[in-house]
Structures are given as C-alpha cells and as structure tokens.
Image (cartoon, rainbow, N blue to C red):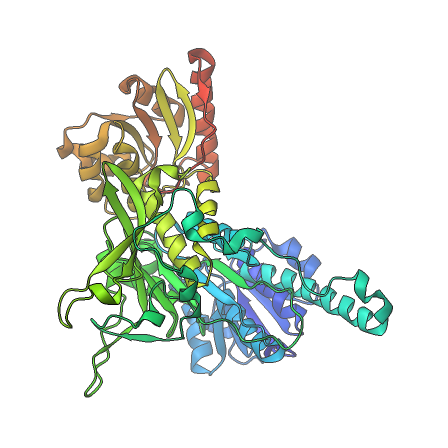
Length: 598
C-alpha cells in the first residue's frame, strides 16, 4: 500500500464498498475525497467517524472532480453504472490517472504483500448469474475442512478491503508478539510461534477409507498435489502420469516472515465488481453460468458476459460450466505454435452430465441414483493408440442424495466448489465430509414448512429468470410445483420460464409490476395463471392450487423493490403468510438446509 501514501484519491459512491475504500486509503496515508450524488448517503456518518480527514463532495459526477485538481487516482463503487461515472472516469483516463475499484485495490495490496512479506496465498474467485453465494460459502467450508486457513469475502460481504484490513491487524499483533518473544527468550516455550491449524487434523485421511466414496480406479490421490506448474496443456494430448488430474496450483513460495494471514482467499465477485477491475489475477476462478440479469446496468447480455469473463485474469486456472455455451465461449482459442500441438489454456470443467476429460467433474446416474464423479486418466496399460479417443476412469465421489442441499442444481454447485478447492491443493477425503455438512444459504430454495402435506420453499434470492428455471428443474424432478412469480423484472426476457413451467408447474401465481409480462410469456403453456395483489394472497392462491405431495415455491425471477424493501423483506412476508397457514393446519417445520439455484 506504499503507492497510496500522500496520494490524493477520489472515491465515487459512498456505499459499503465506497466506505471500505475510503477507510483503506486513509489507513495507508492517502488524502481522500468521496463524491456521491446524494446529499446524505447512508454511510456518511460512518465516513466522518472512521476517516475524519476525508472530504465529502455531494453533487453530480462531473469531470470537474478531477480536472484542475491534484487528484491522482479514481476508484469507483461497484453499484454505479458505467454511464453514470463516465464523465469522471473518462477524464481521469485521459489525464493518465490511476483508475479502478475495490477489487483493483485488493489486487494491488496482495502484490505489495508478496513483495514485502513473501505472502502468496491462493486466490479462488467465483462469479456467475446464480449460485455465487452458495459456491463461495461451500468452497470456504471445504478449504477449511481440509486444514487450510481461509478468508471468505466479496459481493455479499464482508467487503474485500475490510476483511484484508482485519487480517493485517492480526498479522501486526502476531509480529508484535514475536518481537516480544525474541526480546525475552525465556518466554518462548510459553508462546505459540505458529498459528493454529484452521481445520480438522484428518486432512490426510486416505480417500479409500472414506464412507460413500467409490474409486473405480484406486490410486494415491496425493500424487496430484505435486503436479508441476503449467499454464497451458497440449490439445488432445493426455498428460503424463505425474501431471494427472486434478489440476493443482503450485504451492506458494516461502514467506519472508512468520505469517498468520490466510493461506487461501475465496472471493464472491459480481459483474459490477469485475467490470471496472484492474490487475486482478486469481489462482483459479469459476464462472458458474450466464443468464439474463442486470441488463439495465450493462446494456446487453454480451457486455454482461464479458464482465464476468474478467474473473479469469490472464493466467489463472479456468473452471467452466460445460453445459453453458456462453461460459464455454470464454475459453480462449488454442494458440498455434509452429511444429507443436496447439496450446490450450489450462482449464477444468464441471456439469450435470458425464465428464469427458481427465480432471473434469460431473454427475453419473447409476441404478437410478445420481453420483458426484470425477474423470481420471486411464492407466498406461489401458491407453489407446495416439489419435484414438481417450479412455477414462470414472471416480465415484459420493451420492448426490448425501448432500443436505437438494436438487440437481445444488449437486452442480457442489461440483464447482470441489473443482475450486481441489485446485488449491485440498485433499479429497475431508472435502467430502465438508460437502455432507453444508446446510446451504438462506432464501435460496430454503425449506420453510410442510402444511397438510404441501411443502413450502423460500427462494426470494431468485431474482432473475435463470435462478427460477434452475429452482423449478431442481424441485420439479421429484414433485409438482405451484410457483409464485413476479416483481421488478429489470428488463429481462421471461420466455425461458415457459418450458420449465409447462413441465413442472401445476399452476403459477403472478405478483408485482411485471406480472403481466410474465403472464404473456406463459400463456402458451396451458398452466393455470392466477393474479395476486399481495404476497399473502399469493400464498393463499398457491395453497388452493397445490395438493398433498406438491411444493409451493416462491421464486419470483424478479427483484423485489416494487413491493418490498429488499429480497429479505419479501422472504419474511412469505414466511409469515406460511406461518399463518401452519397455525391452522398442523405444520411440520423443516430442519433441512436451504439451497440455491445455480
């Protein structure tokens, strides 16, 4: 953070991220100005208290904020659309100023820490339209279960810079304690010199000893952790035995001092955060899926996908959903090298189908039961001639039914988390324990109650069409669904809802401003469509349409702001309506974990 000292920085927007950037820059000696179009943004009081030297400027985002001033850096809050800040950012770029956002500052801080302290953690990044929070939380849990120290931060909080600042405070306290020990050697036996292990001690448990793991090709999986670094692999060329999957990132270099900083960072990143980022290079990153969302912010689906693709940087391991064509299109074209096979950027794929390449993850249906599996390269004695189709061994990891989070979409979420944590060198056996333990996140296909045989699910976080499609497909595989849809559609195309509604829904109840647009998209399905003026009425109508064994799913495919304060408020009203039914219907409250659509 040496670059910030005495630098005059301008921060656009005073939300949670803007406040975090202001605190961070002030901490390292920058002169801070924060600009916001609002006279009294919610974080203004916190800014005055926590960065009292900062200057606040209310008014339009105009080029005058940088022109004719000594501002040398401009950092933008992620919630501000590019068009809104363009006058300032364009002027700053023309003047050659440093521009970026919170993710840019985080990346710069890691580079300086590597130079100053030898701190080189693995950085795992997650983005996508749906499933980000589940995969982020689950990946963090798997890394911790495997015995590595981990920090989880990003989109839904805590902010990147606030989390890093807290970890630096811990490091400073550790360094001070070490200095005291060196000054008083007699106390050295009473003071810890290394941080305690962050996870269970059983990280080295052999996979073969694990219940629920069937390895159809027994081998020592630990060999993979010694795989050499490689940024590219030869196209159609099976790796040598010592390079077999899973792809594992190289171990970090030895630190220059004793560190208590996290070994692994797991970051949830939105398209807003990625759009203006500069210099971010994760160790490995995943794009879970792409569907219509935030088109009012990005302008087009192509611009939205391009922002998501920035998560990979130039060198990190790419983890891709092979069932999503827009995600697979992010893989760069092979690099042609004279007299050599074309080079393909190193990548791993996952999906709800069978894996086709060594190191890839997928699902296999065996006697009617879905298994999480990973593809391994065939041993040398069974390899075919060069040019023939590559033969694989399929390693069965665990039944999908063993997950507490239900639905095919959540099995795919679990595969993405496994791929990420495996890339960071986490052992498989403890990760499978972590998968079984994970209960999911609130408001993501979360079981609420069973009333008279009807099961109610809260998917208020399903704020776009892709999330609702996945939720319908996940629940509809086992039962008929009455779905509650509607709200602020953010300019989405609702036509992709038609096929899953026709296949899985007994009826649909429509609420909110864009209910009429959803009705128009679903009229051809033949499914009964009912209109409700409130969430309470929607729950009552859905209950009337459902029968014993059915599910009532509140997955609006829309934002909530036309009727509610936020998606949590919407969920609370839904739950209260279900509770009223339960009081008169003899409900059984559910103890199972919540889920998220991917």
